[in-house]
Amino acid sequence: MRTQVCIIGGGPSGLLLSQLLHRKGIDTVVLERRSRDYVLSRIRAGVLEWGTVELLREAGVGARMDREGFPHEGTYLALQNRGFRVDFKATTGKQVMVYGQTEVTADLYAARDAMDGVVIDEAEGVTPHALDSDAPFVTWHKDGTEHRIDCDFVIGCDGFHGISRPSIPNSVLREFERVYPFGWLGILSETPPVDDELIYANHPRGFALCSMRNENLSRYYIQCDVNDSLDAWSDRAFWDELKRRIPGEAAERLVTGPSIEKSIAPLRSFVAEPMRWGRLLLCGDAAHIVPPTGAKGLNLAASDVHYAYHALARHYLDGDGEGLERYSEQALSRVWKAIRFSWWFTTLMHRFPDQTEFEQRIQEAELEALEASTAAQTVMAENYVGLPY
Ligand code: FAD
Ligand code: DHB
Image (cartoon, rainbow, N blue to C red; front, side, top):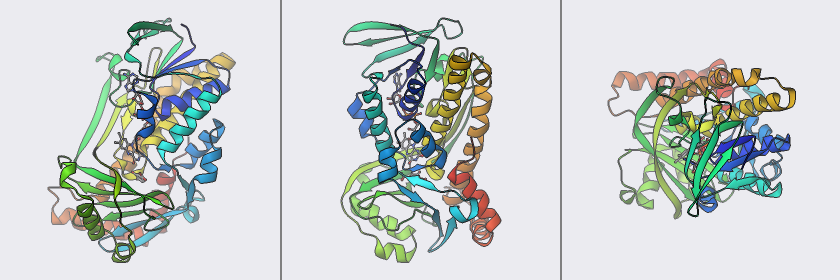
């Protein structure tokens, strides 16, 4: 087999890049380790920056998002039991879209199928080769047979635990990491959201977040010990704890019900440099991880895809390699700003195990300063709605 661009990983970044390139007449093959059902059942991000919205539209997958997604013009931040609103629209002229990653992935698979795009699932032992040569290739097993595809470029869209990043030699790869001493316990429930906007709450008992997917599907998170067992968190215990951490009037309005999904996620900041080595480009979680507090993970994957897409289109359509030369530097410049924002927002909103009273007062003062200053809110909003590409 031969293709121009071999993409490892059929999550949102791999599918979106494949869809964008195909529409420019550039041939791709996507290799995904899991089954399609597995990929489509993962519940993850929920908030799209406007740049992501526009990229999805450009990829021809915006129609259902535009019909069923919910534009949000602001969010609430709460301190103990009071809240204030940050108005994205008034401060930046921009907004975000609430539309689940599950839906984005389903729309991308449907679009790939409609164009006869090649997405090979359940590909085992995917291995890239000769990435520092002009003739890279990728091998894998499926149904007991070994397969090989030759290509011009390999794009690593295979997430944090993928094979692409470890294919860069140790002498070249640099990794930067912060692991946070807590996790997020998240549930999905078929109940109406407590508010029509998100609520991010700082509370002495720990952080809480009220989010949503639609009028009858809510997503809630509370800070927990990353080693907690899910069995220790009955639905009842979750709802009781959430109510303690959000403003009283929201707690009174909260409609509870059985959870239909419940999981604990660890929080980390991580960046790998460079994002390009020879004929390999990394996109999305394969190159970086953010703690979820600023809703940046999926959006950063989309901005990497934007840079990789334009670099590859320039190479194939204009014979100009400059975009590929600059890919790592361009993508990393935006990545580090999102890493900074997610670290800041995480640090501001969570209770750390060894937090002193001094540090707690600083958090409170910073939230009060944010409430009092339109300038400070503008900086927060600019980052939340997404920095320009
Ligand atoms: P992924 O979605 O990880 O996709 C990578 C794909 O590659 C997967 O389908 C995987 O099966 C495949 N793969 C891996 N290894 C191989 C291999 N060797 N060969 C072939 N295929 C391979 N972000 C937010 O903004 N908000 C959230 O609330 C949020 N919650 C999250 C919860 C969890 C549990 C996790 C893990 C992430 C969460 N994120 C969240 C982050 C967000 O979901 C990711 O940033 C986003 O999925 C990145 O997309 P991606 O395509 O780069 O990687
Ligand atoms: C969601 C997740 C986030 O991390 C966030 O900051 C906002 C919303 C969500 O899953 O809805």
